[in-house]
Length: 196
Image 1 (tube, rainbow, N blue to C red):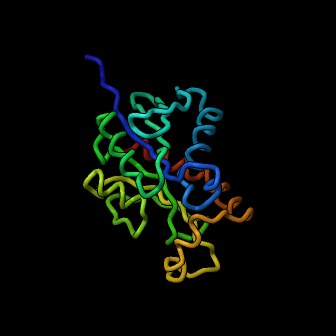
Image 2 (cartoon, rainbow, N blue to C red):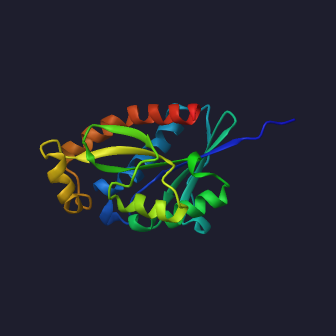
C-alpha cells in the first residue's frame, strides 16, 4: 500500500501593492518570497513549483515537496484584515486542518531581531490573525511571529502606537537586522515541517 503524502500549509501575511512593500505589516510576505528563493538555491534536492495565482483561494501558491510531505506556500492577494477569507479557502481547497497551518506575520510585541513560533495563542490585536480566527473558527493553528518593534521603544508604548508603524516603510538598518534573521527563521521553519 502506497503511503499518502501529508500536507502542510505556510501562509505569509501582507498587503498587496507596491505602496506596502518593506512595511512591517508585509513581514510574512517578505519572508516567504525570500524563503522560496532560499529553497530554490540552497536545497535543489527539494521539488518546488513556481508561484502561480490561484483565484479560487485568493492567493499566489507554490508547492514544495520534501520527502512525503507537500508544503503549500501561500501569499494571500487580499488585504491584511481580510486574510482569513484566503486562509479558509486554502485550508478547504487542500483539505487541511488548522493544525496543519502556520501563519507568518509581523509582531509588534517582539523587538526587531527576534522571532518565535507559537500555537493556539490569542490574536493580541493583530487584524490579520483576527480575520483568520473568525474565518476558520479556531485559534488552534501555528504562528511564526517576526518582531518589528524598534528596540528603543518599550513594548507598552509601541503597542499603543502600532497602527502608526506597521504601514510605514522600515529603515534600512531595521530591514537589514530582520533580513539577517531570515536564515535562522528558515531553519526553525524547516524543523517545524519535519517535526509537526
